[in-house]
Length: 144
Image 1 (cartoon, one colour):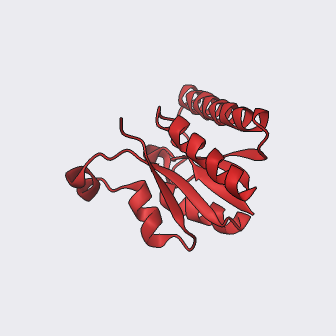
Image 2 (cartoon, one colour):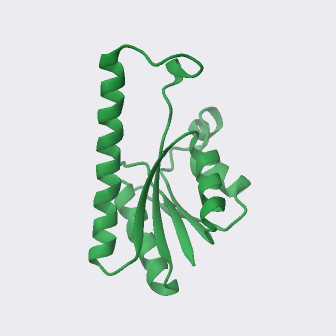
């Protein structure tokens, strides 16, 4: 059994990883930590921009990978089986695609609780997952 844990690398990610570790403890599941890096909108369908911008994007991607690896280390140090993934794409679509590819039985995600107006105008990653996911989604409240 495995669970896919979608994290956005905000301060809320620690709470999501902690909740996922409890699920893994109860189920013996392997944990796949996924961070979806959204593509730069300006470059979709075009060649990458100047070298300085490409270099900055590569540095950002490396930093994100290191952050996800840090969470994986916390889990493995605590005795859990865990792997890191950083994938570029649209958040909900990529998360569901990776869950299917891995054969995940659960998706764990955080909810920032921005409010109804924000969710209506901008959308909510966790709400999109709940609507479209073929597997159960555990939504972890992350507001203080």
